[in-house]
Every structure is written in C-alpha cells, then in structure tokens.
Image (cartoon, rainbow, N blue to C red; front, side, top):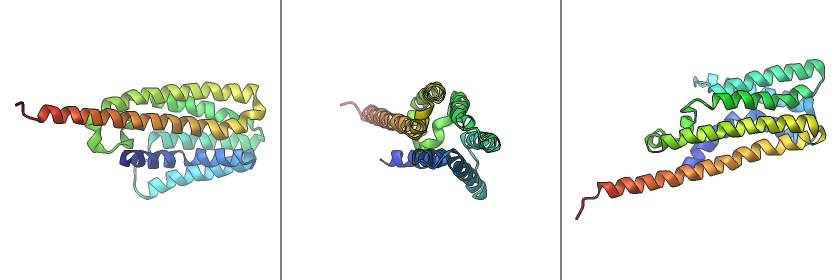
Length: 191
C-alpha cells in the first residue's frame, strides 16, 4: 500500500492539468474554459516544482509545452480541433519519451529499485505502447466520432492510465515480494 501511495502522488501531480481539462470538458464547461483552466494548472504545476527548487520531470515540460501550443492555437483560431488533436500529439511524444529506460524509477522508493528495477523497465515499455495506442484511438474518435470526443477524453485517458497503474503496482508488488522471499530462503543456512 505504501508503494501505491508513493507512486500515486507524483502521477496525479504530473497529470493535474490534463485531469482538470478532462473533468471540466466532461462536465460541459466547453473547450475554451477547459483549455484555459488546464493551461493555468499545468503552468502552476511546473511553477510549483521550480519554486520548491525541484527538478521538473521531462514529462511535465512536454505536457506544459503541448498545452501552451495547442491552447494558443485554439484560443487564436476558435477551432477546437487543435485541442482535440493535442492528446494524439502528446501521447506520441510521451510514448516516445517513455521508451527511455529508467523513466519510471522516480515512482518507486530508491530502496526497491535494486529489487524490481528490471520489472519497472519492462513496464516502461508497456506504458509506452499504451500511449501509442491512446494516440491512435484519440485521433479516430476526434475525426470520426467528434460528438463523442468530450466523453471519450473525459473518461478513457484517466481510466486506462489508472487501470494500467493498478496492474503495474500489483505486479511489481507481487514480483518484489516473491524475490524477497527467495532471497530470504537463500540466506538461511542449510541443515
């Protein structure tokens, strides 16, 4: 449970701008207010990290840059398709960044890294694959099922991420515990 809480905090914090955008859009706030609110929150997240003297994660910078560019395009043109396409672009960029080994290491306590670091790297590839699949699905829904896009963007991204997150945490926990038991058995003297 402690590992779950350790990882959940940064995950929610990193996604706060997207969460605000999706919730407002699903609640019927409209593209422009949701875009402005998501942008303000994304800027606030990065500003908060900088203000505390912390290193801003690459995914936070990517999210902020994409939010600023698509928000500006949407607000200047009044065309919501920029916002609808933004998740596809973000998912492709984030999926590519997630191909880098070790990006998940900040989500587990350092003491557990030696125990399950290889599992975290494998899940990094699974997360990347999910982002690429999400990119394709978002584009399909935005272009072919435009009326359903607000509901889709308000539900699917968070549901898929929390679903994979639950599987990820449970799998890492089970494998970590099994490895600890195996190590404890190897350390006991033979009779």
